[in-house]
Length: 558
Image 1 (cartoon, rainbow, N blue to C red):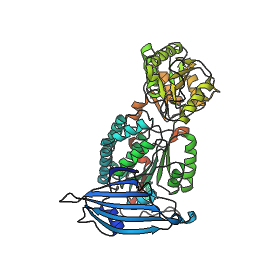
Image 2: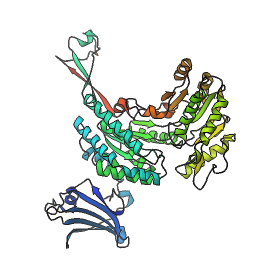
Image 3: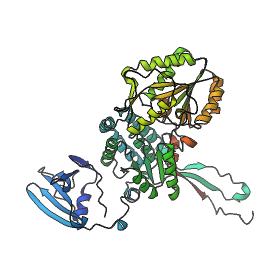
Image 4: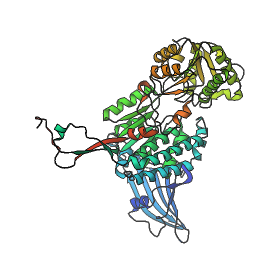
């Protein structure tokens, strides 16, 4: 037996999605007359000096408003066995219901732990029809309206931006988009019969594409946007008719707990949240889900993909890479300032820990000095906001190494209050002037508030550098007024996405457009757009003979 507590250790009461079923499972009674048919509250906490792990389920009895509490105490006894005692407390009355001792099994006899994929396959709420999916999306909207705890949790875990309101609104817009698509999406899509007449042999056939849910999808979310990338792909998966297992990042425990609490409250039966680290990911993959989406870095993606191959689990990889920015000649000072400020949006207000952040800038030599001067001015105008706090020690040490290894002039200079701060794990927003290509800062994704700035003589030179330094990035930025330069850039830079004279928010904020990488920056598209519905659906072809039998002629045509 596994004892799985899907809740927090806290004396604070929480709403419980299951109602009388818990009581029935423990006692064999339906709870009627005790008030247990009403919505339950629950809490887990340590009792008796941390010797007893206590779970309590509470409800208000109808009529007199008297509370009924089902109490389950667990305590380790001799031999590592587990003693459980179940009591019902109503007013001053206490009823002993059951007392059991569970024998501890040797490790080789114990199971593998919870099986969320199997649970959702067997006990998930219906999602087959349009109405079922609309209901699930409505529940996500209820969750989003009650998500203040995410902003508080992101502040505690140093996630930037701390306020999650804007991201929640974006996801709410995505829900509205999918609701508009669903009635048509769930209908069979007719396609023509292109068999030649001699093969048809006088028998017409009807062909249709049925968008069938894949089943249970796993969504492994990253630490840099833990809530947004837990719920964003989940909305696409639910809209496609799938149940979802979310594996939030263990690096942000408060956000992870908030995601779990919200899903328990609003999405029970649709979504299971499984917290933990590497061993949890391995166990989830080994269950053999129907699709898996991983958002994160390329090295971990290789491990995830290799493990998925063992169970032939289809997967979507949302990665990143070195997203370049090309700044062409002919841009006036206002345009150069707009580019510099756009870089600030991803490097300061998103800390650079953002898969779409500008990783390095290739500036035409004719405007190089002007751009560097404006860049320095814009950074100085940030004031105290120039000093950017990173999420953790590992991320800070990585950016610190890249800065020191580059060994070039910084703009603005790093001095006074704007220096590397080991205690606060913060780094000042800084441009690195013309580092050599053998430096680490031009070999690996930066993921921080620094940006190399290099001079180029043409768009063709920029294209050559991009395809050599970081081929097939998630997104490539082109800032130009020249139509020819734009065409050369778009056709010459293989990338998941390209933004011309704009930034990533306009790219990912359009629900009609899917967003994904190619090659090193990812595979598939699990974020927005009709493509995301395709990603999480089985496009099943159904052929049906209209009149007669549509026979095969492998032995020879008639």
